[in-house]
Image (cartoon, rainbow, N blue to C red):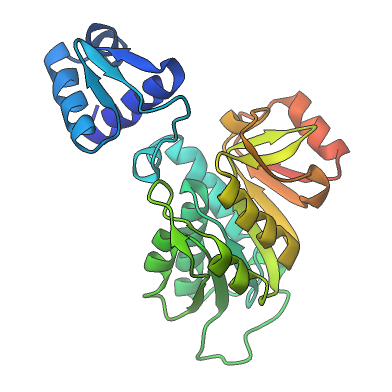
Length: 272
């Protein structure tokens, strides 16, 4: 197990339990206690946790795993989800992407498609008016997505502005909302932290939920992307109800019961 994978697992355990014991963590990760001690010391140096005698505790009751440590979780599922979403995007569409590991994979899939010059995907709703110019426009409040796409000449990248959150690289606040209120999207692709059949789609942070809600309001079509582990899960801040979601793309771990409930809500479900 690599160090990033160990750190991701340790932080997940910490989020679930609120505290970690070196011996228990070593058993769970099948590594030596000395390795766990070094990992906890390094995580404490990055202010990711508080070191204690014999283990560590979280900084507070609520804990959010930073994006850079979440990317290795459910990686193969996210790749399949991203490839499926890219097929749903039309040539020349204006696409909104919020932050998250799954939407980052969607951005990469779109970049690969644009680089290949394939205009056949997504039903081809319209062609770019300038054959030499961008084939796709992406509006995002995620700094990491903007950084990856800015070097792609086939994609016009629009960054919302705002105040950056270090955990997720998302821009939030009044400056972000100001730009969002001035754009019109063909489709919004949303990464979320929970999907509940009664409450809708949710995320951990209320400021991020507010910006994601604007993506929904400005879009003609809404695609939610998430791995099946988040299905049926609730988070603190609600983005929107299921009635605002057109398509949900997830992995094959989606239960038949949840798939049926989503279909009853009028959502087209793709489990890949």
